[in-house]
Each structure stands twice: as structure tokens, then as C-alpha cells.
Length: 330
Image (cartoon, rainbow, N blue to C red; front, top):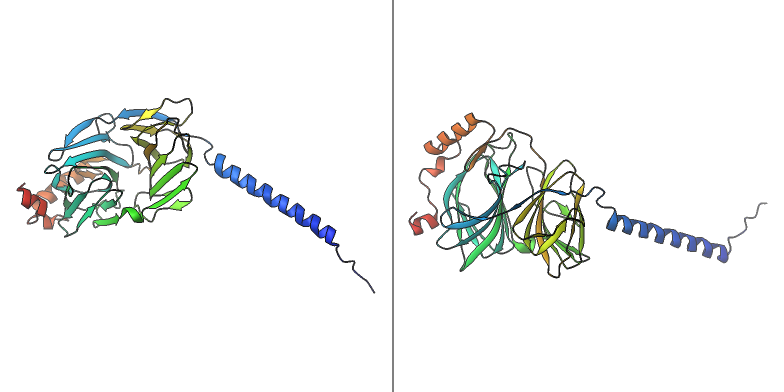
């Protein structure tokens, strides 16, 4: 008869002690990896622009960084405007085809109307992601007293999506995903950051992150290595890419070079706020005529004919005018 000796309480205690120590080591290694190993090849700023004010629409002022003569296109991004508008100025009835517009309000409110009957007002922190597709005519006009401020980004659509039906995603500020950690706060408009993912669907794979860094905060944010990406500074000043880089202040755009992510530091005594935007390049031919963005000149010519004759997606433009246009007699 074989008798198995019971394991002593002392032996069990040693085993548990070893297991606890091993678990602590694993947790420490995971924390170190999370904090310091996120970005292995930080992207450096390869070009820098100061977005200077210019007139746009009817009496509106925009600071355009992408879509100006020095930077016509940064695949897949067509335009980035930081806009400022006070009634009665605004962006009355105008058409689009072939891309998406992303409007993110910073101050005040803007009312959007279109010929499909859609009407909505977005205020501070709210977002509208509009897919123009095969055609839309709309207006964007001030909806509050004082000056309305925000950002509008144009994102190109691939050839297979340029003629899809128009679509909207409107998200109120309270529903935009947020996360915070170690002096960093992020609003996840599209993509993922600090373990938080946005519910916004993007036809062209895109990340759009609104960061605020407290003084002394240090950020590491992964970016897919094959994507193009840029930073636009809204408030304060920050150091991007390398601790040896010069500080960059508000209204500057930084085009980021190759790498797997962004590193940023706030070495000032005031908060730093900036957006980080990245997207998968389409790598397709581009022909743009104002608010129409297609792949060939023939498609642009056809778009102009469609709009002038109110056909092929622009049928409702023949008899439609926004309430804002009627009231202001544009």
C-alpha cells in the first residue's frame, strides 16, 4: 500500500510566496511596457506650417493649413480649416461630391441644412461627420451669439466610394469617448487612444484625437506605420517627436514623418491642446475643382454638368434653398 505524504503548510506558503512574487514581476513588466514601450520609432516633424487667416465663404475667416498652395494634398486629407465666423457671415448653400467633411466645434454653434431635408445644430465639443458621396448641397451658418469657432477636415474617398449615397454621423459632446491618464486627457473622435475606442465609422481608415496635456505631461500614441499623420496645435505650446525639437505654438501644423507613433511633451507652465490626425493613404489620382473631388478630369467635367443640370445626385438642388439663405436673401 502506497501512502502519499501531505504537502506541509510551510511548503504551500513558499509556493504561494513565489507565485505572488512572479505575478508582481509580470505586472511591473506589463506596466513598464505600457508606459515606455508603446512607441519604438517616434515620428519626427518633417514640415511645419503656420496657418494664417484668410477669407472664406461669406465673411468667414479660416486658418487653412492643408489645402493651401504649399500643401495642396496630404493623402487622404484635402483640407484642414480652423474657422471663425460671426453672424451674418457664414457658409451659405454650396455643393460637395467625392469626399467627407468632419466638423468639430470648439466654441459657439453652427446649424447645418441640406437638400435631403436634414437639419441639425452642433455646439461646443459636438461633431458632425458628413459623407458627401455622389452629391449634397448644404449650408453651415452661425447658430449662437458672438463668434463660432471650430475645425473642419476634408477626407478624400476612394474611387469605389465617391458615388455612394450621402450619410451623416452626428455625435454630441457627451457621447464622444474620453480617457485620461498621468496628466493626459484625450477625446477619441475616431480611432483608439489610452484603451478607449470611438464608435465613429470611417470609410477611409482614420484616427482623430483631441489631446490636452498638463504641464510636464508626456504622451506616447501609436500610429499605424503605413498611415500619414499630422498634428495641429490649438492652445499652448508643445514639443513633438524628440525632446530636442523646438516648441511649437498654436495654429501650427506639423506633418509627421515615418515611424510607429507620436511622442509629445508639455514643457511649459500652461496646458497644451492639439489634435492628432492620421489616415491610410488612398494612393489614387486626384483632380479637384473647388468642392468637387474626383479621380480624373473627365469625372470633374461630368460632376460640373451634373450640378448645373441638377441630375445624377443633384436633382433636389433645382428647387432647394436653405432656411438661412432665404432669411438672409443670399
